Length: 371
Image (cartoon, rainbow, N blue to C red; front, top):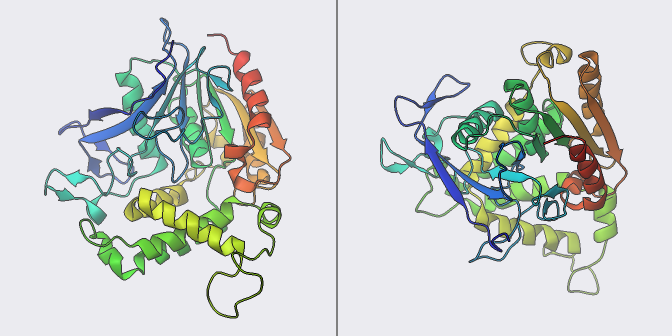
């Protein structure tokens, strides 16, 4: 019987002179990765699935912690008899470097100064995050992963894993993701970053132990949350309903339910996320482009995994056409790829809430992979 609670685990590596060499050419180390595991690794170590979180996620993908009984962000998908069946698979999720939930990031203590890194933390990329995760998988003694998967930024990591370590990845499930950030996606992130950096409390990133840039981070979260939903889902959920009043106030208080909702979500976010981490991770997303050194077809020339790509009709942040371009490039390389577009109104957040449709696809896909 599995333990009813999950516990965060930590892996530290990269002490000098074995630091991680980043894509920028700079070195980072020592590095700690926070991670969680669900299920049991079989004797052959052939049932491991690596799950990746999105921009503001963390390693707590499923189950509950003993001290805080909030289920993980993908709990409906991970567990006994669920899509990622922990009675059959060993599931791993790690917080990315640059994050603020146990992994080394800008809020971590710089051993050279004994103070938080702040903006002295080097800029990291999706490739760097993946390279750090590879150290973890090696540490766990896993030579080949049954599957790598994630939604949004998680899908970018899964894609990069399949390209950097083709012999280590048997399959990849890419959900609500793409192969590079477009000008519009970069622009949205830049507005969010400017909101943080324009907050006087940001203090050039050196706010630790002082007042956090809560106003700027809250605005950033509001911008982000709007992009995660669709126009139809927002209209169905809120419409033009008033909040706590029967008529318009003709002032700048919150008249509409949607305004109060955004404030509530942003206030909660400020309590749990580091502003500098938001800057670093969003920048890593914007730098992502698997075809930066070639064309898209050439980018998949060494890939060997079996792919399942899932998109959603109402996702305007990572629209389906971008995934279809990937599918075309994969097929040109004679890769085994399946593409499914799910009809839903939930927008980009569909990978977190459209559970039934995703579960059927994932179960069928994984069920065809022998352990």
